Image 1 (cartoon, rainbow, N blue to C red):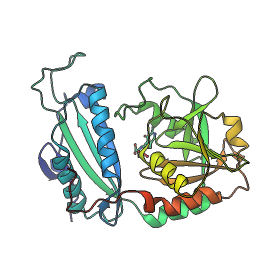
Image 2 (image 1 turned 45 degrees about the vertical axis):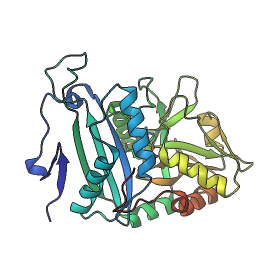
Image 3 (image 1 turned 30 degrees about the vertical axis):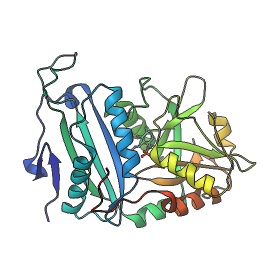
Image 4 (image 1 turned 180 degrees about the vertical axis):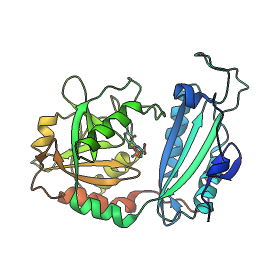
Length: 292
Ligand code: PDD
């Protein structure tokens, strides 16, 4: 079965699909996106992801290309046509195609919409979580509107490559005061020696991760204590646990930071417990029931 990608109203094999060379996403990274987990063919936390998408569009004064129901149809149809059972679905919206100009194009320029879906092995994810991953830390060199989920990801791409070059799995970025902001494509967490979860407040310097929000709910449901406050690299290194959250990696234990072993060197109990119970708290969409 050939994989297909949705581009502006058409589901086409990848070889036949394309976007215009003057798409503002291509020239200015003038676009926003969402990544939703797909589990047993269903979307996870669609409502929250679509709410964040609407916020991203509104913060950039970009029009919504269609209503949430229609976007929901595209997400489901892309998952179905690619027979993705477990994995992710990616939705990107840009300000559309127009002669290159830094200012916005005329209001009648239609946004571009692209959607694709990938399978990801649940088994591989579980194995990775059972071993734990390693991260490096490096300066956060991004712009200040990282709360908007834009396709302007060059700093994160450079960071991830630097991690890879160092033999690590992810890069955690650090602000000018020495506090961890977030990972290249995830939110960062630690557990203190007293068993308290700590993660940076979403109000400053990070993307408000959906997995972060749901993990907080899961922690609350378990009666775990958590605190939203910045933490330094030093505090992270001496924490009893560290982990990160994202729609593609879920709750992923971190066992090394800059080569320094965290806790016992094995994934922490709290991180593993949150990973295990995550989907009891997450919202699983039905393939047929669309958002109102
Ligand atoms: N990344 N922070 C950044 C910078 C991210 O790119 C992401 C997600 C997150 C976690 O957000 P969420 O829990 O909503 O996935 C935090 C996605 C998965 C990506 O770019 O592939």
